[in-house]
Amino acid sequence: MAGNADVPAHEIVIARTEQEVLQCYDVRIAVFHVEQNFPLETEIDEFDPTATHFLLRLTPSLTPVGTIRGYKAPGGYYKLSRLAVLKDYRSFRFGRELVLALHDWVKADALSAGGDNKFVEIVSHSQLYVKGFYAKFGYQPEGAEFDEDGDPHQKMVLRLPL
Ligand SMILES: CC(C)(COP(=O)(O)OP(=O)(O)OC[C@H]1O[C@@H](n2cnc3c(N)ncnc32)[C@H](O)[C@@H]1OP(=O)(O)O)[C@@H](O)C(=O)NCCC(=O)NCCS
Image 1 (cartoon, rainbow, N blue to C red):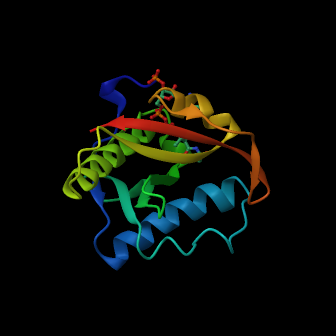
Image 2: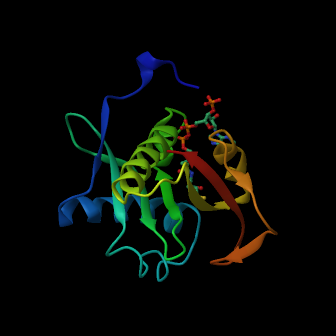
Image 3: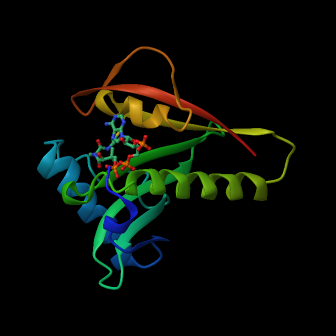
């Protein structure tokens, strides 16, 4: 784990312009397609046009290095997906910061919808080797492993207090 002094200066923003959204896609393609060999055809999907995309970029250069996306699913839960940090920038806790940024957004979105729910559910389909990463935030495995895009995944669920 890199010490704080080694962590490159950075910021996380919600991608608001087309260019910022495309930068999120570029990070995903570099990680999921080029590095991990997932198909390019399924990388950009039907959820992308309406999802909220977070971009982690270095400052002051604004070089994109990480991303995550979230959206509210029809079942009322939130979906966390497409979490990726470029290989050269791993172990700086960027992945953790992206997940926490997404949690903050989920909380704000759920609270703005009103109601008296005490919890909101967030679901992630985790690659098996990342289950321990999600577990650190309290995500718990639910159900059996399943295939997604040709690779085994595990549904991980977090009940996030509001
Ligand atoms: C998964 C990923 C986003 C983690 O990003 P990262 O910035 O390197 O991770 P962080 O530095 O934020 O790690 C936070 C904590 O999780 C731990 N961790 C990181 N990867 C882990 C893994 N695969 N399994 C278990 N723990 C892990 C770290 O050791 C750290 O622990 P600590 O808080 O006790 O020090 C990154 O490895 C990645 O982009 N992988 C390729 C894409 C991918 O698989 N995405 C997930 C799709 S389901």
